[in-house]
Each structure stands twice: as structure tokens, then as C-alpha cells.
Image (cartoon, rainbow, N blue to C red; front, side):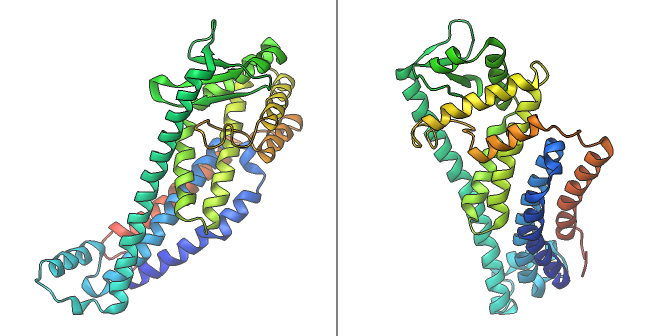
Length: 316
């Protein structure tokens, strides 16, 4: 397992720095948003697995030739059948680091989920006081605000779309339809789960380029996916106008009014600019072969560290 640990460490470093930097600067993800989204998830998962796996494998080197044998050795040490001295200080430290990092990642994922649920609950209570149900749109609330605002609030069967009076007054019927389709796509495709996962990843490892770049890129890709669904029923010009008007409404609101309150997908200026640029100067979608290649790379990224950990004697 000695060489396995070093290979996993090298893979973790590659996935933590050069790969996310290069991917975040690439132009092709906008042409294949689903494939790019899968690739970002694979990079994050494979990077985390490689980090933990490298420390785990190195720590288990004195106890066995593969992961199963090494873990059995740890159990024997815990039960008193083998001496802790077999590990040595450095290997014991590596095992402790692997355990602490794993616990940190799991705890941060749970803590992020708890905070998001708490924010959504508070925001939903505020909406109960400050909004009224739409008369002609199910699962839609209308807030009395002159700024054109639209967002979705996930909650399983209680998921809702929130619109403002200003939005409904300012937008044409087609533009409003585009906004509704966009927000409903976020809910239907459960984009909030991706946002939760990458928010937790960034909270757990804020110093890692992967976490920051991935969260930013995935947020942009989610918007692109929702835009693509809206484009099935409205023209690009209609969607461009709707995006610009909604973005102007978000800019009129105080920074703390929605962000952090449980509202989903409040666009940043950078994301809005990217969405508008893609619609105003459209590029052809990536071919089926190219997308299949990206998905194959994502699958390979997940398969390699997994195989190295579970295949007995892999890499020595």
C-alpha cells in the first residue's frame, strides 16, 4: 500500500490545484453544462477520496498489504491482540489525520444542511407574513415589492416559487413565463442539493482552490441548465430581457434581504454576465462524442481511487 498512498496523494494534489483552475477557465462547459457538472462532482469526490485514502493507506502500511488487511490490523490493535508499537508514530499520525479529515467532512456536510434548513424555515415564516398566494399559479407566492424579484425556495412537497409585484408588472407574459420555467427547473432538477454539497465542500476546505472554483462554476452551470429548459418554450431575446430585468431587481435589494435567508440561486453579477453573453453570442452545443468523453473522464476519476483502495494489492 506504500505506492498506493503516494499515487493517491499525487492525484489529490492534481485535483486540488491544476485541474479545477484549468476547468474553471475553459469555455466548453457552457456548451455541455450537464457533462461539466458531472465532471465537477467527480473532481470533488475523487479529490476528497484521494486525500483521505492517501493518509489511510500510508498509515496502514505496517499492518497489511491491502486495505482490508490493514483495517483488520487496526481492529486487532484496538482489541489488544496486536501492539500499537507496530504502527509507529508517523503511521499512527497518518491514520489519525485520515479519521479526523473524514469526520470533519461528514460533520461539515451535516452542519451545512442544518444551517440551510434553518434559514429556509425562517425565510418561509417571513414569507407567510409578507406574501400572498398567487391566484392563478399553484405553489407560487407574491411579495409586495416594486423591484423585479424571482427565486425558488425548496422544501420537498412544500417547494415554492416567489415573485414580486414589481416583476409581474414589469415583465411581459412571455418573459414572466420564462422566469417561471427557469425557477421551476431549479426545483424539478433538485439543484439545491448540488448547491448544498458544494457549499459544504467549501466550508470544510475553504483553503482548497477546488472548493471555491467548484462552487462558483456549479452555480453558473445550474443557471445555464435552467436557461436551456426555458429556451424550449421562449425565444432567446425574451429570456435575455427577463434575465436582465430580474438581475436589476436583485441589485435593488439590500444585500442581506435574500442572501443567507434560505432563498435559492440569487444571481451574482458574474453569473448574470455569463448567462447573457452565452445567449447573445451562442455557441453550438458540444457533440455527443465530446460529451461522452467528458463523462468517461468523470467516471474514470471516481473509479481509479476507488479501485486502488478496494482491490487487494493494487499498486503494491
